[in-house]
Length: 422
Ligand code: GLY
Image (cartoon, rainbow, N blue to C red; front, side, top):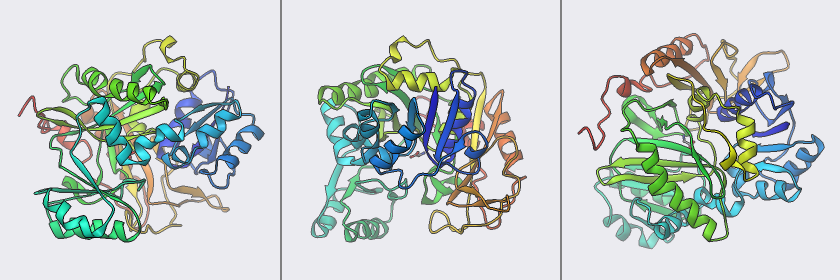
């Protein structure tokens, strides 16, 4: 099987690494890829990955048997629809189903119809209504961009002025704003393969969205992640699948917009039960890196089965024992404007997954994005995996770069307070 992966982040590096282990894969391409994917997959030039005609032409030209679309923007733009219309198998939802991520309003509507627990929310699209709406929320304000914002459109703060200023910035740039009640409790990312009706959950993970240690600083696309969750109650994944994923998948199918691809539920474990913070329509980054590091089932076969509606016929997923941790190394300036073009030393070491990197003509690997690397560690338990990840991180040199030093630390120290243990 010839597999073409679309995207250029740490998630895509993890996807191509996993698929390179799958004996059914005869050729692997990645467009546009990065300096890491280039070492395992043919690097393919592509113009705009969100342009359906461009991606479809590439998939045809390269004779792809399966196209795997990594990021949300092409999915929301209808690239999967166009690839499927060419008769090619495509892993990723239609534009209509990708609205679970592309429009928070749509996601709320689906959840309400499916009876799924989530934060109370109001959409504000007129600045004149903002202050009155804000008065109905608090003391902790959650202000989100209604559309796609690469994780950076969210402000969670007790400071009304900060919340108001963020909402005004979004409104001034023409984006409707979603105000939400704050969901208390530890967060969980659960990825599920979905082929329309059949649901296969992967290992649960936790990611770290704030830039600084102890969850300080601005929101980012994600600064680290680990899997599985040693503190999770037995049965948590089944509870989430039964109470949240299946009802939403059923609702989407009943609306005539079945979801096919990876449905990512971002959840808070509240005292009332798991509640949805957000849905995403693709693998999460950086959670994919630790989750796939533990998956033994050949990935390409699994994604092909998902794309072709045959997931129910697949055997149970096989997972390596132990844990995995990913620590993101970010460029100077991230999550604002990152400094680019710095030479990275140690980027080719074991366990170093690339995100914002490119290979210069002289062969040097240089930074080319905000999140530059995700450094993986695996081990018999979370403490060992964490130690390995940080042992690898300190070997990397990138001027001005920064990373969190507390990824998975609270879990290792048994300091995650869940509704069941608090
Ligand atoms: N880890 C957050 C995201 O992928 O959106």
